[in-house]
Image (tube, rainbow, N blue to C red; front, side, top):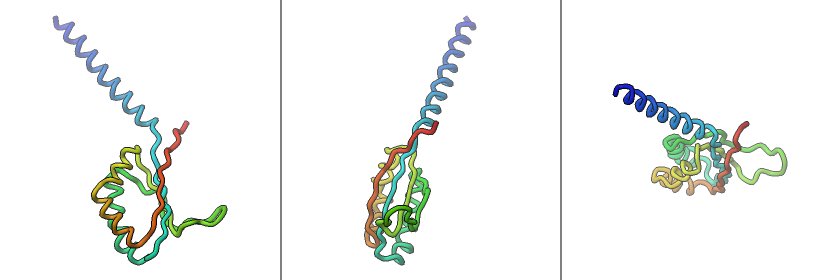
Length: 128
C-alpha cells in the first residue's frame, strides 16, 4: 500500500514541477511591451519640480522600468517634441493597469498642466 502512495506522491510532485517549469519558460519567451512618449514641455520648471516626482514612483510601483528619457538627438529629420521617454512593461495588461491606476491618473493630471503628450505602445520582439 505504501508503494502506491509513494508512486502517487512522486507523480504529483513531478506534475507540479513540470507545470512550474512550463510557466517559467513561457514567461521568458513573452517579449516586453514598450511605451514611447513624445513630450512637448510648456513649463520646464513645473514639469521638473511637480510632475516628475509624482510620475516616477507610479511607474516603478506598477512594474515598469524607465529605459530612456530626455531630449532626443535627431538622426534623420527633426524631432517633433522636446522630450521623449521609453518605458518597459512585462505585458500589455501591466501597462494598462498602470495607466488606469489612480496614482498615475493623479500624476498625469499634474503633467497635463506642464506638457502635451503623444504616447504609443509597441510590442517587443522575441529574441532568438
